[in-house]
Image (tube, rainbow, N blue to C red; front, side):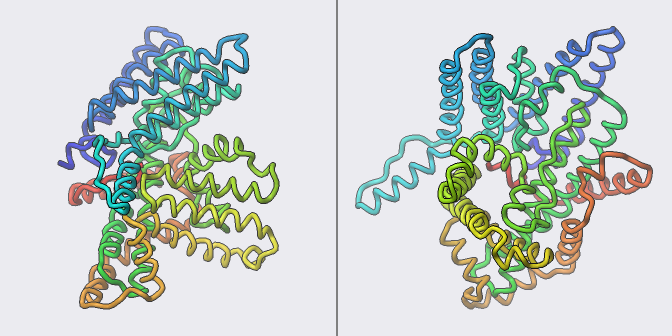
Amino acid sequence: MAWLSMVFTTYLFVFYFLPLVLASYHAVDHLSRRVGASSSGTCLALNALLVVASYLFYGWWNPWFILLMLGVTVVNYVCGRIIGQPGISRRLSFWVATFAVVVSLGTLGFFKYFMFLEINLNQALAWLGAGPVHVLEITLPIGISFYTFHALSYTLDVHHGTAPPVRSFLDFACYIALFPQLVAGPIIRYNTVADQLVSRTHTLEKFSSGVTLFILGFAKKILLANAMGRVADAAFGAQSLSAPDAWFGALAYTLQIYFDFSGYSDMAVGLGRMIGFEFLKNFDSPYKAENITDFWRRWHISLSTFLRDYLYIPLGGNRGGAVRTYFNLIVVMLLGGLWHGANWTFVAWGAYHGVLLAWERFQGKRSAYQRSPRPVRVAATFVLVVISWVLFRAATLHEAVTYLGAMLGQGGSGSGMLLIPALLYTRGTLVFMAVALLIVAWPTQAHDWSREITWPKAVVVHPLFCLSLMVMFSQSFNPFLYFQF
């Protein structure tokens, strides 16, 4: 049942889990200061509370998933401690780091891609006339892609000397399991929160800012992402579409995925502020990008910087000549697409972006595209991104090709085409889409707008939260899109 799911946009989280955690957290903080505990001692107690709360949050879906996350945590903690020992040789450090990478990525690969490999093997066997092979039925643990990357970034940063080795296992477990960013990011680098794990401040201003940002993200998800999701589902589920209807559905999904994921990121950063943490911004008006390179500087920033620092640069970056640079870009985006899911559609989505990035690098500033006025560049980039989201949304490559064909006017015919406009172009849909597009173009983003709270802002966000709660109770369950990744 929907109400049993531990998602930010359910009343189980909003009315029970979150108030209980916040009340306990700040009670412990107040009590520690009353008894004169040191800052590090206070943070240790608070981190212990957060570990318990985060494991409860994560185990709500499946308690067995906790053991898997704990195993990844222990391996990377021990490896980090070994690497951080004074006088350790560079060779030994390399092999210990390699062990952590193999174990972590091996765990991720097994749970995320085993069924994908088995399905494709059986398809190949069927083509050869052989029978299928069934080995195991694997359930994908929620959030495994995110907490694995958290753990890996720590071990690799300690190996490269860009992050200090953590001393307390409790602090490291808190970093990995911290419930605001546990199941759908953003990907928090350890060196950005290392100091906050041992000492952080709690002020009314920071708490108010966090509450405001949480409400804004909550409203993005409930009021906009879910409304656009219904339109996208109707379009992508149709048997045949006219070109305008197909483009409208693709636009709806483009807005859905942005408000769904940026809304989650806003809520995660807001929750972090409520408990004294400051996480980096994960979105920077991506649909205002002037080209695909600029888009990836603005979209899912924590992932794009992770891929840059831990994959693109180790592959050689742009240091091996033009051809090698193009190759590296395409490989990185292919793997980035595969990270999103075990499906050929994600591989195709990654290849699409990789080719566009390589083409932009090849063209440089010589192309008419780059010499065009900024509004033209932004509009052209937006269209390219809308097309890419069709690959991301479709269940199979065949469905993606069919939908793209509909966008080009090859959507076929049928009586069903006459019914689709009645589902897509309702008054409510058009209003919500207009509001969504207005917010996309708005110069101020929620992450920055919420930093300083004034009475006029409070007058805006409190009714907005009440409205979002009322709509939440009237909606069917709609999980965050990025939970599946």
